[in-house]
Length: 424
Ligand code: EPZ
Image (cartoon, rainbow, N blue to C red):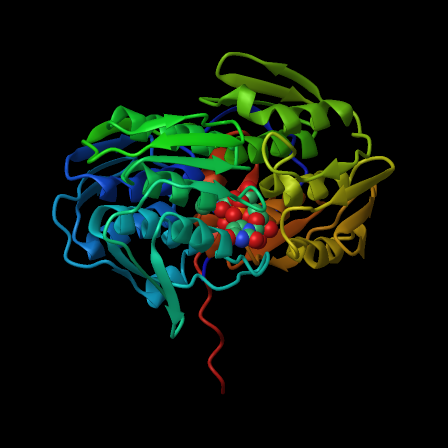
């Protein structure tokens, strides 16, 4: 397993180009199942999860030509409606093929995703919504089996705004008979991006970005082209890299409107931020001030930026209270940051972060995608060398992170795993 080695202390300066959004690419790729026409998807991030989704579509029988940031997909005939455990266990977002398979082919068998480092990650709201649309659903031997002659429009209320749940149900309802209303829908920008792509292919969806979606089912969807929106979490991560190193960093090819909550918090902490049409410049000269963070569904502060903000608050002046309201155990980065000298107390779903003047480099272990990012950021500012192990977590969602950071002055490199010393 590769690891990333960072020598901290450099102020980052320069421009970081942002790649396409992983969490938009995944539902958009899954939605190609909904029609037989050719789909050309561009601005795909070169990350493992996108490759995995392409592989899954191929396993189902779609023709997938995936080169770099572009994929051409044709799902006119498929030969399987099963997403197997061995693949789903590597990427829980595989559940996004459930709605499209059921809507287009009347059946789907998808392995239950199971939990992960950040929580139990149930899919009960996905299943309850599909049942409302008329699907017969059973769970046996760790698999979801869903069948429906033809889905019928219904009124669905989601107990909590679920991003992939809203996406699954929006895709399924696109081909249902009649009208579907999804209340308490998720409002993340990735929902808008998917809705735009589906409407371009003939779907009739209104309300994306609000908490009430109305979908008029149609007989079929055509093919279509789509340029994936920029990744707001990658953008936020590189902005925090500029902040934590007291640098001067401009992120380009981004959508500042998707970053509002983060920009507000960084300004509150004392960062100088200028937002342009498709770029944001952050400058930090002195020590940032501690700031309270509460993660919430969009447009609230994104849970996917919580670990990164804890890292920068660990070096801020004063105390920050960080409340994680979206997932039940998204604090895997805390123990590792403590090993770098961070002063963090865990109280239920809250962290009490008392800023320290410095952190010290250390060997640390990545546990999930965003926790890994938090550790990289801490390493950029720590005194000495930090070695982040198990960086395969990072590769799931960040395109060339060490190259992008090195280009703005970080001393960072990826090293192939040493083979463990043979037992003598
Ligand atoms: C999406 O996950 C993102 N993944 C996550 O990003 C992100 O953290 C999350 O949304 C929240 O913004 C993708 O888009 C591929 P949810 P998702 O359903 O859809 C509960 C990353 O790092 N819930 O919005 O799985 C759930 O337990 C990843 O890029 C149910 O109870 O998250 C959680 O508490 C990590 N029942 C809350 O809702 C359900 O059926 C929000 O989860 C579904 C969800």
